[in-house]
Length: 168
Image 1: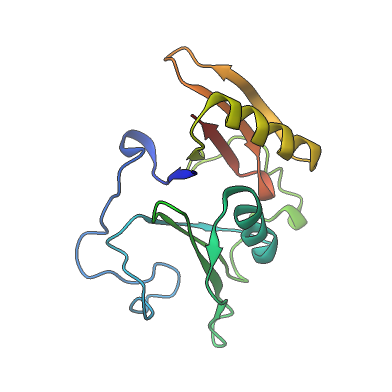
Image 2 (image 1 turned 180 degrees about the vertical axis):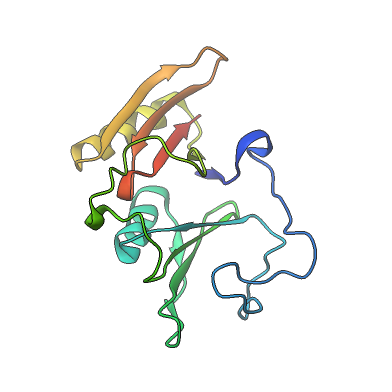
């Protein structure tokens, strides 16, 4: 079983409600049918929407909805749902800068979310998934190892350099 923890900073592992009437952050519209932003949904902007979707589907068992495309703004997104009910929205919008195709080093430390953490259930599963990602060409940033605070984890650079933490 894969459990995803989508949060920033001190709230890791907990759902954080949006607080008030939820709007889609990317285009300001009300949530689409079936969307509930007072759940465990987080979003990330990517350059290659399909590659990001496929990464989370292939390695973490996500299920993707049909692509949403706002013809007026060029905004596109997929909602990815994981086994434990957590959701990740991967999205792209033409005017968002900082793209690899613009020469930006996406592996460098930067502001924003530090990583997305996925709990895979055991040290053996951490090792196996890390090996699978390496054999498919993804770079290991650290581990697998036991951290100073006692967690067994590895970190890999996922699509576009996004840090993916794989934990027990």
